[in-house]
Length: 452
Image (tube, rainbow, N blue to C red; front, side, top):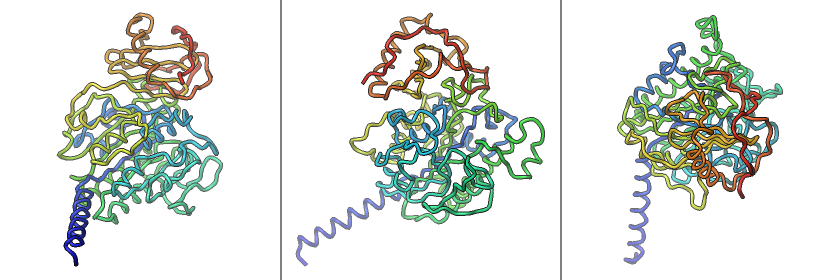
């Protein structure tokens, strides 16, 4: 063997060992997404709810007290996967039928982590459109359903057809969906390749309609709002199984856990977003400001309440930074890395961000500017008025002018959405929500078309 060949082999072996060591040292990531869980749907916000496992997670990690999502599920899921505003792909509400949704070939958090040596799995709800499938979007493994909702026991969608699969193949299984998803997550944790870290995303269907709960929990929670409370406790039990698995496998210390809800709760189904106004479908806080927790022992201070504004499209760059995973090149990311604020448990100045559906909300510190699709604008100081009872747009003219200029800059390139309503939706009071038909008394803004 020549000396040159020997050196090449030694260098290659060293490089491979270094790469393997770097991969092995990276944290596992477990992202748990609830479906339609409102701000007051957890025990650490509302003593009427039974969520001991989430309450413990809040004590062991940090609560992201200002975590923002989209008012319906599909946009939130696209934002999580891509780090981009879903309106860039014309995803502004819950997708229906054969809508394409998220395009194929878009870099995702799953494909990025997979390229960095992670084993990637998605368990549960997909609902980001028909243009791509979890396993063509970066996930090595998929177990769950593709549509907006399923029957918890029959695993059928709105039309009564079976919507349940494993790795692209339709399967018939018995059992309560929340528990089946939790048990699958446990299997993935226990059977993992220990030479690789994992990115595991568990997108539960609870507490989304059609509500259903195990008999023992229904018996436990008889009375007012009993069904909803039972569904939420079952969700918490499933989450508890996942957390126990991390402990049993002795990987708790090296696993970053994130929990949040995809949008606010629906009062019609028993969800509560108190003390916020509005709920699911609305850009008021009750629709887009949800419970969120993050835990990584030794890396994130325990038991803290972080007031840093964080939005769902921030998770891609934030989790990548925490795990040392490179962001994809030449990919436009709207989210920003919030890991420094989370790791230091302190509020750090950040750029404003948009929650853009047909209406657009801009969060800039304690200020929230809403550009309603019909042409009116609203301005709220969330630091003083979290229930959004006092619209300051007319009173704070100069601040409104400055914030509107920021909004115009941030929304450049977003597709135009045709006006659909007469003004801001009705709030329905704190903890209640859904879109209404408010008349929109705020000032009309000229030139509502988005800039190209």
